[in-house]
Image (cartoon, rainbow, N blue to C red; front, top):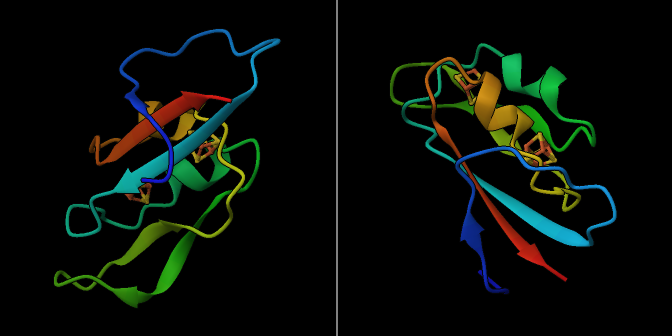
Length: 88
Ligand code: SF4
Ligand code: SF4
């Protein structure tokens, strides 16, 4: 990762904070339900056209605009998204 990061376990108030976020999705455990897509304020996540070994179109980050808010990780029913955040 290109910057020092901190794994997020609880949501925090991001007001007045300049932060850069990054997510890591365990694509093999993703079932492609799409719940995380609607939770992201910056439409960072989309379902891949490719499938994992179980045949699911897994979620992936398609933009470099993650703010590390952790909404996607909170709503994911299987907890397969890890969020990392760094202050800028
Ligand atoms: S942490 Fe927030 S901004 Fe980043 S991908 Fe998840 S919902 Fe979107
Ligand atoms: S909410 Fe979780 S299981 Fe559903 S598509 Fe997103 S990462 Fe995959």
